[in-house]
Image 1 (tube, rainbow over the protein chains, first blue to last red):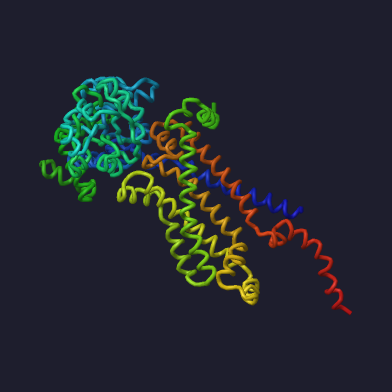
Image 2 (image 1 turned 180 degrees about the vertical axis):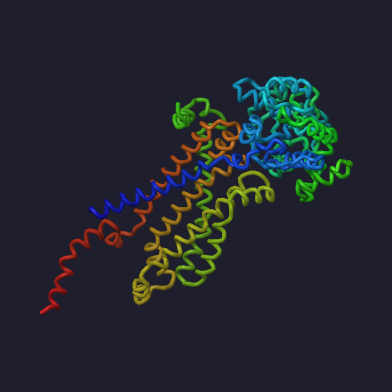
Length: 310
Length: 246
């Protein structure tokens, strides 16, 4: 009896300590803390863990290198929650951001409601006051990578759909294949009802406008999909993005966020690249990356060469 | 309020217990798809396992194949199948059946293999046919291990069925997906607590079934009985040892 109890106790201790070791492993050190961007001559360019964002970061970084700056790339750093503190305190100096989503992130982090602004100018002026003191926004590019209400060409032809308002022709409740956050966003079903008087429900797919979301509208499980406006699949899958005359979805233009003390020549270089970025150009860059399977770096390089910037 | 209290508060919040996304609805979907997937796996894997155990042939193939499919990542398989056959219940069901088969298969053939060959030979000597040996000797004796295999499969499937919500086909996993997306960690934890509670409930039921599955004549060999018998047989065992010494 005693040996059995002792053995059980020993096993319990073994399991508990193994769990403790495993959990200690989880609290890993900050991956960004190594190799600080403290060197004043080095410009640190970051990007999200989002292929399209990585391409834009490569565009900025390669142009900066071409202009003679020393650049360190910190690409693929997760979502906003992971990288934003590093941008705010200046350990990342250049970050391609999206004005609408960034503004809402900053407002929510402050415990405020999301913005009611929907135009590029309105959002940029709100963003100016929401940004922390050590960073600034450079002028936005034309390119927008916003959430959209997108349908298949087939459905658009059948009901003659051009704008979101036309969805009322389908009748009933519109099923929208989208990520879970769409259900609670201001531009989700609540806003659709308020601005267009159309009832919608979310068919929760979790791949951010990826193949499963597109499958949902191709198979007719849903009528509408939330596809990001710069996604290559709008071209490759022949999808139709519905116009938004009542500005339901806020603008989400590519907007570089840079440290306030960034060299003005460096800022000029970034702006030069940014002027070339239209949504069509961005879709094409994304297509070369996701369909032709070219790396972000090589896609960016050929774009800059083609536009005589390299 | 700490996160655990928030998780429990989320479970008992009336707002989360109404409509198509109510906890009760999702719980029922979760139970339903888990049992359905395991039932299909049983129909497929038990006959194959019995065949392997009875004939003693094909064991290495079964070990290889079931080991191989055990390594398939369920999320990848689910996505691939959903793109091939469409969204809905089909793709997640197949993925979960694939996940459940190895445990049931292993439990079945090892259950038959573990039977003392002397017992099978005795049955043969009595003139039993192959089918009689299978039905009257091998299946009853292997039953505890077969149920054990099913129990392991249920545990794996009940946990993995959270992925069904990845393609919006129901179950308790949707709370985790939407909670993470909306940074509502009480929802993530609350949903997880319900899954854990369900897994524990299934464990209790299947542990009881496994005990019931032990045939009456074999219960002398079960753990509690054998401990008593070793203790009582110990002094008897010493007698012949003493006897050998003159």
